[in-house]
Image 1: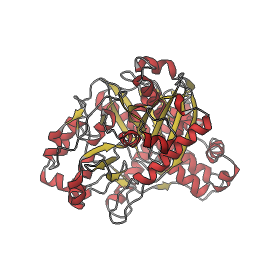
Image 2: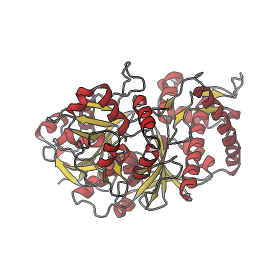
Image 3: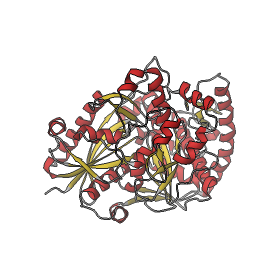
Image 4: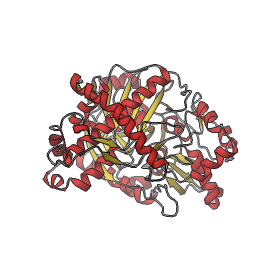
Length: 515
C-alpha cells in the first residue's frame, strides 16, 4: 500500500528529496549542496546547470529511498518546491536551452532600456502583477532576446524550477500560480498569464504553458525517469509551488493575517491576505499564495543563510572538526550580550522593491579587544543583523496594509537554532513559534501531493492536523529595549554604507538590474 509522500525541494543553496508518512512525520532526507555560477562574460549572472543539477536531484531521490527503506511502490505521490524566480527556457523539442537562478541580475541594460523608453511602466505593471523588474522574468527574457537572439528564436516554452522537476520526471510541463506569479507576467487577480504584459515590453506572447492550480495531479513518473531516480514508473506527480508559499502551508499559516518567517539562504517574511492589492509605494512584493483566494505580502532579506555558510567555512574550521559547527558557535554566541557590545553588521538591506540594492558587506563599531570582540561576537552580530532586517520588513508590510501579526512562526534551516529564534523574538518584541518539521516547504509540497491523490481533504484542515509546534520563544523585555535602540543606529549606519556603494567606493552586495 502506498502510504508515503515525497517532496523534492530545489532551494538556492541545495536540493533535497524528503519522505513523509501520512501523518506528516519526516522520515528522511537526501540532500546535495549546489551553486549557480556566474558567467564571467555577464556580471551578475547566475547560470543554472540543468544537466549537472538533474544528476544531483536523482542522487537525492535515491539516497532518501535507501536511507528510509521506503519501497518505491510505497510512494503514493511526489510534489515539488523550489526557489522562486529562476526560469528555464525550452525549445520546440522540449529540450532545455537556457536557465538562470533566482537573483540573476545580468539584465541591467534591458531594465535601463525599459525605463528609458517607457517611464512609469514598472509602476504600472507592479499594480497588475505585484512585481517589479528586480527579480522578474521580463528583463531576463529581454536579455535573451538582445544578447542571444538565436536562443530567443528557438524558445517555445518558459517554466519555473518546480515545474522543471516535474517535467524531467514526466515530460509534462505546466506552471502553477504561486511561482508563476513571480515572473511578473501574471495577473495577480486572475492567477493566470497576462500576455499583454509581454507585448507591452516587446516580448513574444506565445511561450506560456498551461496553468494549473497547486495541488493538481498533472502527470506520472515516466519509465526513463524511473530508471534515473529509483522511483516507480507511474507514480503520480502533483503540481507544487514556490518554496515560501508551500512553506506557509507546511507550518499551518493558511489563514488571513497570519505570518511566517523563513530562514534559509534568503529570509522571507510572508503575510497572508485575502486581497492582493500592491503597496502604493511599490516597495513590497505581492505574490499568489499556493491556496486559491489567498495572496501574500512578501519582504526578502538577502543571503543570511549564505552569509552564515561563508562565516562557518571561513572562520570556524576548529568547530567544523569538532562536530556541528553551528551548534558549537550558537553555544558560545549565547554568552555574548544582546547588541554584541555595540557592533554593527551590514549585509541585507530592508526591502525597497522599486529601487532595491544592498551595500557592501561590513562589520563596524568593534574594538581591538579579543575578549569582547571575537569570532563568536561576529557570529552573533550576523544573527542580530538578520533579525533587525526582519523587523524592518514587519514594519514595511504594516505600513503598506495597516496589519501586523500578534506572533510569527519561524521555519527553515535557521529555525534549528534556538539562539537565533530567541534573538528574533527579542528584536520583534513578539512570540516566535518554531514547528517540529523545519523543512516547511517540503512538508507543504507533501501536503499538496497527498491532496492531489486524495489522501488528504481540505488542505487548510489537513495542515492544521499535521503541523506540530515544537517550541515558543517569548521576548525578553530588557533585550527588546536594547534592540529597539540598536535598530535606529543600524538604519543610520546602513544608510552610510549604502552611500559608499552608491558613490562607487565600495561594491554592492547585490542590486537590482538597471539601478
